[in-house]
Amino acid sequence: MHRFLSHLYLSDMRREFTEKILVILFVLAPFFTWAQHESTETESGAESKREGIKAFIDHHLQDSHYFILTEDAEAGTHYGFPLPVILWDNGLKVFSSSRFHHGETVAEVDGNHYALYHNKIYKTDAEGTIEYDDHHHPVNAKPLDFSITKNVVTMLLVSLLMFLLFRGLANSYKKNNGIPAGVGRFFEPLVVFVRDEIAIPNIGEKNYKKYMSFLLTIFFFIWFLNLLGMTPLGVNVTGNIAVTFGLALITFLITTFTANKNYWGHIFWMPGVPKLMRVVLAPIEVLGMFIKPFSLMIRLYANMTAGHVVLMSIIGLMFLFKNWIGSSLSFGLAFALSILELLVAALQAYIFTMLSALYFGMANEEHHDDH
Amino acid sequence: MEKLIEQFSFGLFFWQIVIFVGLVLLLKKYAWGPILKAVNDREEGIRKALESAESARKEMQNLQADNEKLLKEARAERDAMMKEAREVKDKMVADAKEQAQAEANKIIASAQASIESEKQAAVNDLKNKVAELSIEIAEKVVRQELSAKDKQIKLVEGMLDDVKLN
Image (cartoon, each protein chain N blue to C red):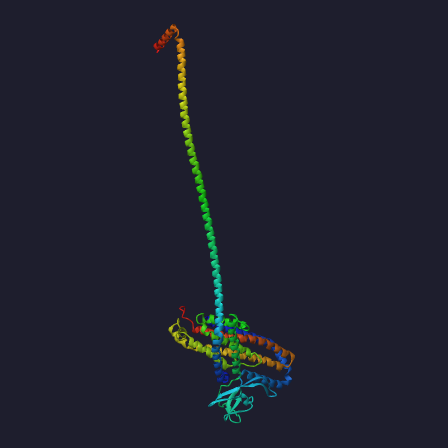
């Protein structure tokens, strides 16, 4: 029962949080509308700018085959570096994404032509024509894309950072007689926090050890990626559905493969309820098995994406208003939200880890007679 | 939802799984294992140190209690010994007194007895002396009285009168 309560509590917390933001926006709304009227004379210019900002945000939220740090859209110049493209299209095709020229040209590899459209690679003819269906979706063949994209590079960077950081912490114990040194002094309490506040209370003293590596890794992995999303590097890894799907899938697999008899008993033949109810409950419980990791996936994705969208929109407003009140208000709001997002970055990592630990705890729960 | 599925990139998913699982395994070997072990060891060390301090404190307390007990016992023993000694002394004094009394009584009794016998002897001696003197006196008197014949007759007659009267 308390688990459901904690679920409710978390969603309550989020709702409260959203409500607060709405209140802030509502209070500030008159300033914005007033400020917007100021610039009606350049209606069409603002419109195109707005579209530009929207496109920029959309573009930012997606993965990319380039690691672009900044770009000058008017001049058409990009500052960054191309990343390797790896395709499986009747054989492995590896080439640099610079051959797309930021989507402007068609890349020809081994007699095949590939074009970049909305950050996806399609197989095309030599001219790069993309055909659409009724819903404006491309119908061209999509080769399997294993490219080292911006998100992959970011994950590799974070992995390297984590490896160096925590191996350094582990080594500092040997050198320093069991006491952490340097930056490890900050991270060791967090490791202990994950153990004492997340793993042990949710999984139990007996079984928590085998999950520790996963819980620690996922906590710092998500947290660091979330924090990197706050940097001007413009990465959005944890706001990508494929990444959160992968993380949630691992939680699901670990839960399923380490579950004991009691866990399956609670799913397929709920003890302590009438026989008929057990039959009714079984499909619900089976559904619940999948809903739990699904909620993990959506929660992280939605929170990070929403954070990026809101923050970038407010930053974008600065450039739309072009007057000192609106722009400075937007700046203030963006600043406050950035601080909030820093908190959310840690909070989401904590929630993902905590709920994973909760599910592992369910999988390891011992039989109780008091049902 | 449709947009989400459209956004889903299998390649990214693939790399994410590979990177993440690799990271978990790598960190497990090179970081989490040693870190958790070090933290555990340290906590164990602290726990042990606290425990041993506690046990040392208890031992100290026990020792102190033992000392206290020993001191108490010694004091009690000393008291008992002193009491005994006092009793012995009292008894000895009493005994001595009693003995002296008895001896004195005995001496007094024997002195009294000897005084009595001396007195008796003195009295007897005196009696004898008195008798001798009486007889001498009587002899002298009688010799004087009986020097004349009439006086002798008178005496005999007087004596005879006494006898008749009796």
